[in-house]
Image 1: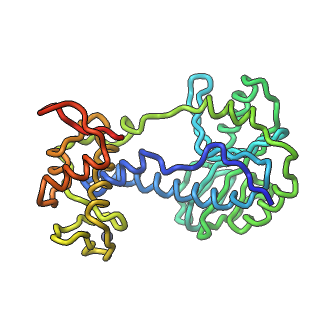
Image 2 (image 1 turned 45 degrees about the vertical axis):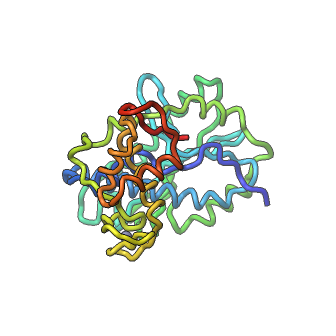
Image 3 (image 1 turned 60 degrees about the vertical axis):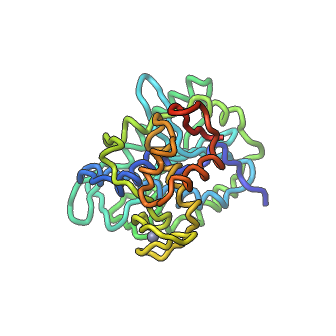
Length: 305
Ligand SMILES: [Zn+2]
């Protein structure tokens, strides 16, 4: 069986990566921490849903995380599945635990009201409809809130809600494959791709500066700070993960680049950033090997090759 086409793959958002590093190197406020954990959980839900769609058959086109502007307001779409005759819209929720619905209001098991995800879906659907119309399309939109977490349970849900529960995964994919389109709607996929907006993750993250961040190299697996070593590899004291020193340093340089896209990469700053490397020569060797040097003397710095 041929597989579907992913026109816009799901990536770990840069914002999430930045917050992950910050969560290790500075003390986030409880709001920031909550924001980070929600973002992380949301992304894990999206990844889970992407694993469901891996079983979709040929001619479906999938786009993840599309950010569009319509009538001066932004709207974010978690996943779109395109065919020549219909557009499927998915709002993905990674909720965990028991929830219930009472007269259209959603509650957690402890009785706290939460935002009604179906209203959120409807708003997104209506914005998407206007967007499609502005592109000259009158395709029907089939939209669903997808709950991806197997620990999620919903009580007192009226029937015929636009909801897909984890237990319905196989049937949902089977139904889509039974109705698989005969051709691909590349034209529409291209229109979404060109309308998609990139949002800078830097103005969303908490404010931080170089000096306030804890320096050192973090473990690739568990995020703990590594201790200096005279061997050719680091061994994390926390999780036992082993990594060649060169790889750890390169990873730290990459992290530095993500956190400080406007700072120049120099041997001195990376030496200070990594903190636990004895010799500047090691840093210089790795930079020279993997980056390109520009400028001379004090102005010399490295840029990606
Ligand atoms: Zn570790």
